[in-house]
Length: 286
Image (cartoon, rainbow, N blue to C red; front, top):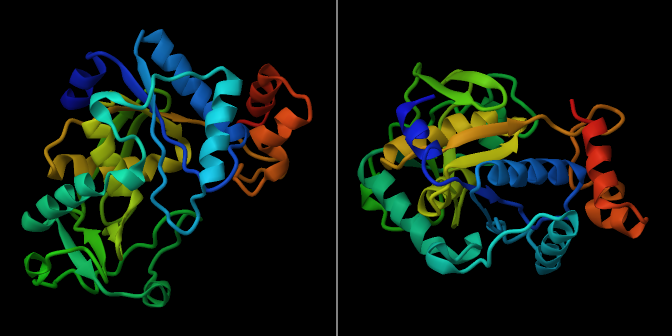
């Protein structure tokens, strides 16, 4: 474990639930969030809930209400979302993200990118995971006008990864992890048009909310490597990580919000108990 992660993990434990209200939570969420709650209890720590509602096209208020209700039904509790780390909804935290964007811009860590999705699709140079960004070919990397742009609007902003550098971390579930910047992932988006991207937002939030351990799915391992680079660039303490195995359907596909029949809400309505939902999730872990 790196020294920063170790110092954070030895402090008062603070974990987080970070659902995105773009659909109903499913059994995969149930298992991951239950593990997060268990780890907080084991460490006699605090578990907070953060509403990751940055996507204005897909996030809906009814899904926010549903995720609160479903998590409480599972027996997962968290303190009131007020206090010194509020607000806990990402849509209300734009000023914090802008501050981080300016620091990254001023120190040369990010650059504006005007490539379209079509441009990137045509220029993709390597196969990628289904939900992963293509390896960026570096078309806009040499742009020198970043510090002349006052607001992150109208273009994407990419993080300039240190090509060839190994990004390593010790995962509390999976053990040592190692990714090579520029090979396993390229320059990644931290701000898309007028919306802060996931990679930047969660780094800012985890640091400002004093999160000591992040519990999430194994599909986000590369995101962890990317986020470690942002933590370093912003000179913020890096949390520890625990990546859970994924819950998959009968065909072996990763459980997703489109699997409505496996949503916690539908299982509740069918008469299932919280214990049955969690047991069902465990049966399909791969």
